[in-house]
Amino acid sequence: MVNFIQMIESRGIDISIVIPLLNEEESLKELMAWIDASLDGKFSYEVLFIDDGSTDESWKVIETLRTEYSEKVCGIRFQRNYGKSAALQVGFGRVKGKVVVTMDADLQDSPEEIPELYRMITEEGYDLVSGWKKVRHDPLSKTIPTKIYNGFTGWMSGVKLHDMNCGLKAYKRRVVQSVELYGDMHRYIPVMAAQAGFDKIGEKVVQHQARKYGVSKFGLRRFINGPLDLLSVLFISKFRKKPMHFFGSWGLFFFFLGFIMFSWLIIDKALHLYVWEEQARLVTDNPLFFGAILAMILGSQLFLAGYLSELIARSSPDRNNYLIEEEI
Image 1 (tube, one colour):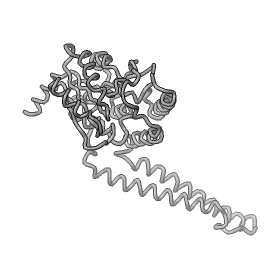
Image 2 (cartoon, rainbow, N blue to C red):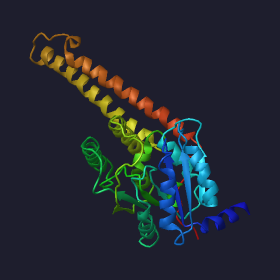
Image 3 (cartoon, rainbow, N blue to C red):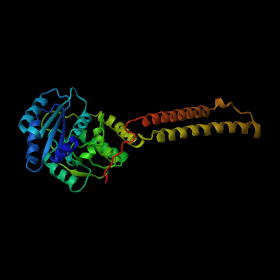
Image 4 (cartoon, helix red, strand yellow):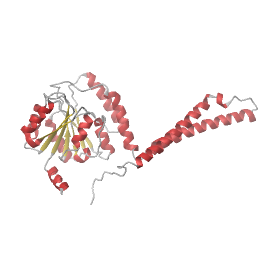
């Protein structure tokens, strides 16, 4: 009965807007007024503000907005700063709308783009639509690394987007309920969605506003952690349920490489002694001997890692969880 009521309530909301924020007290009232002007009377919507441990008056502003806009505004306040991925993960768990929109709280994303994003999801059948800030009002120190990052991510993942990290995105609700975010994985939601089978991913050119208040949270550290996070996403999505396929394959490769090297040393010594009747140096004096031993040890360790990973994967409670699109 509870699930039925929740289903009815969710049908009553067209759009859920999830806005993670950190120290954005100056922009919140203006942002909410902009959202309301863009959507009121056209869509039923809710706005979820996720305060990620702000140290300014952001939470008091959210409380004021809750009083002013009533049920349209919800707020969640973290005890401390956990990061954008954590904020989005919590927000995704509470959305009720058919379409979920994420945007930043710094007024650089325009709410006027939301109706078109909603149309692309509901009428054109996209699973996910990402914004593309084709014209950016950012310094070169931010735009050039971003282009490099987008090119590398597209090459590695196969998901071709001009602006992978754009905060303004729209999703079917099933998409956000099918991805698990942690660390800094929010940058790769399109990649994770594609890996989960939601491969109809579109892109829309959106307006980019210059920052009006506060300071950017952008840091060069993301270009160190970013590629590592991407490799984690690709590896886990492909080998989470079958880790032996990865570790076992490489383990066998290195073990047999070492075996071949060791066999060559034995054959070479035998040829010198019994065919050419020459004095041969000791096998252990040949640097190839140590390479062979190292390769065989590495191969054995990789195979053992695969075996242990397989045991862990088989004991995982979600090992047989699969996304079902339809059932009749």
